[in-house]
Amino acid sequence: MNWTDNAPVYGDMIRVKVKFYHHYGIFVDENTVIQFGLPDNSGTPPDEIQVMTTDIATFANGEFVECASLTKAEKKQHRTPDEIVKIATSRLGERGYNILNNNCEHFANECYFGERRSFLDDVRHKIRHKLNAK
Image (tube, rainbow, N blue to C red; front, side):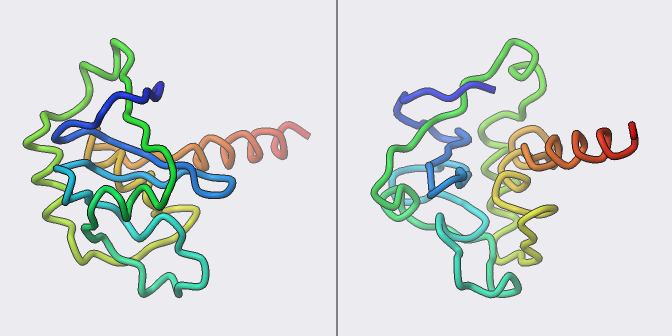
């Protein structure tokens, strides 16, 4: 997946840079971004982090917001904007945050594609592969 500086539209997956990582969410409108936690959850106990809504300014946290730009294959896989927003909305209040296995990127990808995934999954896979190759 690539990322662009296009203005987000209803149902877009968006992200914002936070320190050394990105925070992900689903754009509904300027007043509503659905996200798993806030851009910077440091200091917040994981069991208090939940799927919530904020406005775009709170999501951006003073940073530049990027929109997902899909490859041809991804365009065939993603849900419609109405489905994406409906699924994201149905998860409001959900908890169970885990930086490795259930984070904001997992949430956004599951809403968008129906598949929980994060770049951390690839990193863990590569580490396991290297360890098993020895």
